[in-house]
Length: 183
Image (cartoon, rainbow, N blue to C red):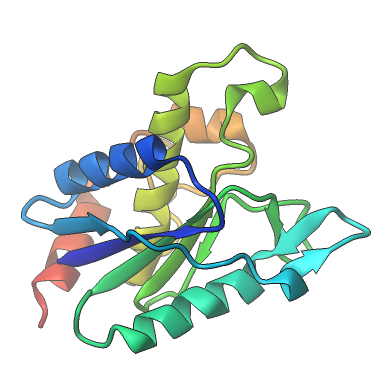
């Protein structure tokens, strides 16, 4: 599987590189490539009353990017550093087509500092990888999993993200492997 990691707005290159490294471990044999250019954060996605961005609006730009690169990548993962939400939820860590080719994660609430804790680069990178794998799992058609340790388990808060692993449970792994083998 060929995966493009697309910065949305300004994103630390080291974080993108760590996500790339982790994705190649979780999806063996995959080619992951961080895109040199970035996608601007759409101004119309910003909701000033919430001081957050509508993730679906940004995801639509990632989808548009996928369409311009037809055939070059199997999946595109947008990585943003803004606070995301969808109507009906206070925030989201990411959103994806399910199934599809485009996914989006936000780094904004993954930093320990957001929760008043000391900076921890390793924890921050681990959370970024978990959310990346989770959203790419949705593009493979995976739904939320009841196994609390599976990366596809739904996270209501950061503690749930920290509890789960960055890999798939056996059931989800089987589905992911079957989907990535399809042309």
